[in-house]
Image 1: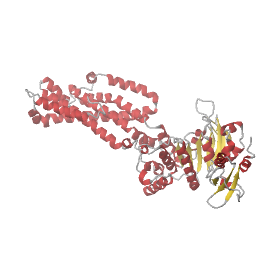
Image 2 (image 1 turned 90 degrees about the vertical axis):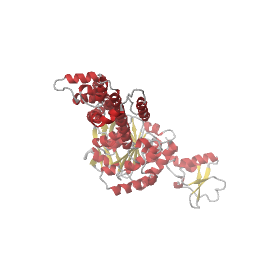
Image 3 (image 1 turned 180 degrees about the vertical axis):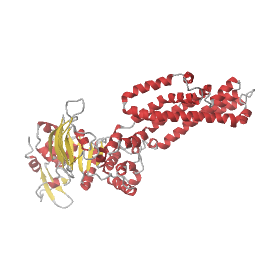
Image 4 (image 1 turned 90 degrees about the horizontal axis):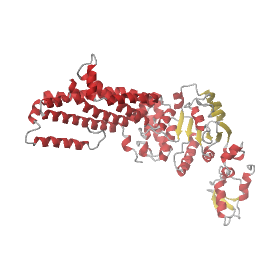
Length: 318
Length: 246
């Protein structure tokens, strides 16, 4: 668990804090997304966890211990670090890049070698093909995968990720996000994830900390709660006018409480139960009939109506 | 003087050999091949070795100064303009005047020492500038990632910054070496030895063979040093050749 206790940061020569009295907790195995407009101190907050930046006041506890209990370099070797610009070492091969932290921790060679194979497979790069290449020989998306693999190398319980999928096109970004969520299902790391993109925050976050200019915490909650009950006008504006639609994207139609279609399904569009409610709504509107049949792998057919979607949005009206 | 990084240097070598052969075919033998074979062991070879010694020692000392100064200056930027000013001033002094000035300093006298001092002074500007440019060329995100993964400052300097700066640093060494090999010929004027001895003797004895041998060997030495350094740089920075093959 990571605990921010009244953490502030003011840079020398400035009177305005970039982070102001931040207090919140990141629970084990969760992705906590720090999101907000530029100048909200989200990256500064993240970098104070592994002490790339030292706070002016307040304390950060990791599993109950202040993060100042050991040297900065020792602390950082225990925390995975992935950034938007990736920062792979251009002069080291992919394998050597992944090996950096294990080598700092004096792992033996065979253990490092098998770890490299394991991680390359995890991020979907064929080890035999990519191990010996230099970063410049990889595409942007492949480099970001290596960046994530490198951050995971020594199997740290905590990972810091600063817009780790920011440097690729939207299609690749979406794919990397999905892959990472699948990986996180397996590895269950405690992750602090920085982004400026509220959609990415909603998609990736178990919990979202919305910061506003001057580094003040505007709301810290689950995506569901933030979209349902924004704590202030600032949060409301930041999540956008389509927050009800965004909330529908958190739920899959397969998880909705729907009546069996019985004989009423004739001539209606069939929808996969893997669709988000938002996408299903779009399909229904496109079909122009206002109703559809939800079907999964089995034979069960259930009826999705506009009314059942509308019922979901009750209580989320501003 | 051949410029560093010029891929056409092999062409220069061939041109030089053709010139020597052409001279030999002249009516009066400009190049006395017989003299060359008779005096190779006791005149030409010692001059060549002396030249290599002068140049190599000078570049080595200059590098030993430029590396730490360059690294320091890349960290403490305020020191860069004064360092550039002083080394730039040294670079601007005419070589013969520089040698002569050093000789007048009590206790220095003639010989290799003042020449080495001057050659070191000449190389500093180029070397320091390239060390700083090389370190500046290291991507900021690579340094950030290195810090974020828990490398110490020392590990970042020796494991990231210097290896990545190497191609630019070696480019500086190549320019400095070629320059030094050329200027070192003038060192013979104050009894420092080297290939300049053959050239000066050739002038005073009105014996062109010595001039041509001294000049040709100095040129060949410069080209050889340049090509060797380029090989070295490629060997130690394999990533630069494979870049962009995504």
